[in-house]
Image (cartoon, rainbow, N blue to C red; front, side):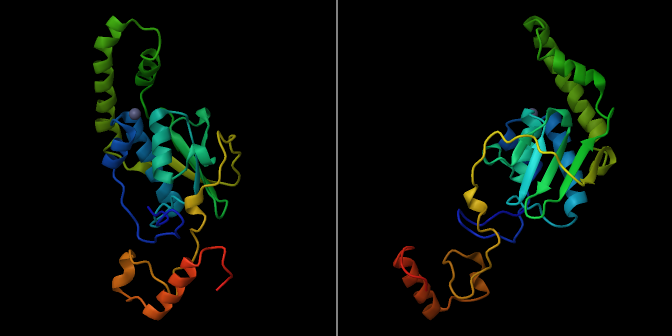
Length: 231
Ligand SMILES: [Zn+2]
């Protein structure tokens, strides 16, 4: 995936690899919901982006308001509820919708109905209900075992696109934003690389050594402050 390179920076073209282990650390635990979300997002990204990295500075995502699926959505797309770029729709189930902000293109992915066992779904609801704690203490580990058995035996042997079906959407009716604010670290995403000046912390510098006279001119311009006249 790619992101901008600093707080006011342009897009960094070198891609990063994010693993399920990273996602587990962010989310707090490994769980069937997290892995189902990863399979869904993989199918969606393969369909929408092919070999191109996910650009986390250019996506809006819609997910169910589930702790697990919501974290997958935010982490892997860069969508954030506080900027209005992570929206919630509980009718989506295990699936996501995305909109590419710069082009308006929309895609969605949904889990094939019936792929996840109804019995586990029923227990998920029951274990959040008024069941007696004396029952829960014994049933929680049995439930956890059933979830991981399903992940290992039914999900992991399959490729994401087998049971998570992605498609292009002509139109996406967006759920309302929880909050709206300007996301400042993506404003300059499309600014071109410098022609003359260089950051002393730019890892690309090995290819082109800084041009001292020009660098000096731009450093002077910076030191005179933003209120000074245009260069
Ligand atoms: Zn979880």
